[in-house]
Image (cartoon, rainbow, N blue to C red):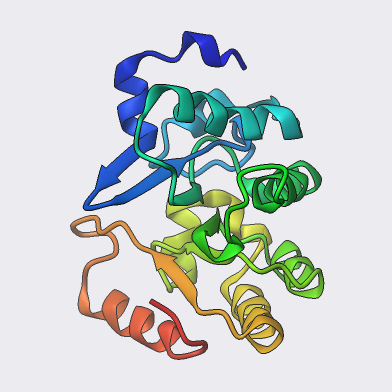
Length: 203
């Protein structure tokens, strides 16, 4: 994973500056082991996990190239962060430490496609960062079609994990939902989403 090959256009896609807020989107893996049908990275398959230094160095590289101080970090680049859990946690520890960026964990969001058992582990580990879930449908059959891997992590298990997360952390969950015409935008899909959003405080 050679950061020196990153060009200015790619920097623009991972570094977003808007009204005093500078959010950097970083990766946790090269490729991805999750087979979401809508994601270009999924077509690569999984090549390997990034190590702790490689995760942190993405931020160091952006800091060298973009003048605006980094205010927020989202783990929404390549890879499923919870499939590289040890290295992601170590990277966050380094980012939030005084010797690192000294950033508040409340300014870091980890996005997952919904690995239920690892969401529970994060809660047990008493993490302080925010959680986002790539949901895209609250109907089992539709979600399995969009994200085939979720057959191993059904919605009832995800719901239980998120309830456990909120009980332990008191931290709201952010749901990510891309709308596709004729797939997840009908009234049945909306009603299912509204119902799912009532299980735990969320946005």
